[in-house]
Image 1: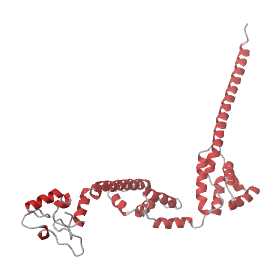
Image 2: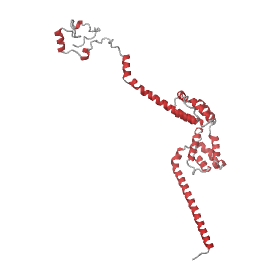
Image 3: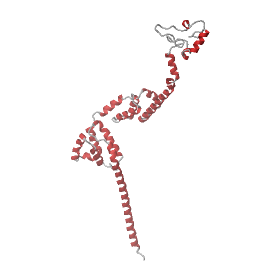
Length: 305
């Protein structure tokens, strides 16, 4: 069965339009499905991540910390916070105390500033920012010193102050270098000048690490002399009396002192041969032995025989 040429063309065109429409609908459904999954994933993370954002009650000293936390929170959820309205709503929901009391009239009056997140931040900072913060940070940067801190601690404090100022990086490089400990600045003098603040900070941390390693190496090298035989023998030589000068009342004869009193057989043998019971030589008795030291008054008689 044959169809007229015009009717075939019309049917084919209608079918093509139907297929194209269905393809568009399928593509739209896929996009919506993907977006929904991302939103659900973001909301599932809110239970853990949002707890890390502290509620802000209006303390000027904590304002920057609060706003920085919000910036990071929004940056990792672009789909959930894609509009100014969602960002404004989340900021206000994180307020408490005096800060919430400040925002409540704006919400009640449906203030136009609530439609623009950047505009709300400007008003928010004007209300809660501490007066003179930048001037105080500039003064602190001019006086900052590393002192006994590690370089990493010094860097952390320096960055906190630098964030409150509008100075150029070259000024930061000069102030950071000036506040370092002298031993680190001495080592920096042998290095190529840093072209950026980050490069200078990296150089300083590397130098501190090498200096610490060198100190540990010197301790290890000195350890045998501090705790070993050499130092102990030197101390004995300095502190103990000379061998040529025995202490008072110490008997010079070392044989009997080491081996103890004479046995009865040894005493009998010396008496038989006419030898001194003290030094073992002939020609005198123990009471007139020339090498036997005299006893101080009141001391007991000589060593046991």
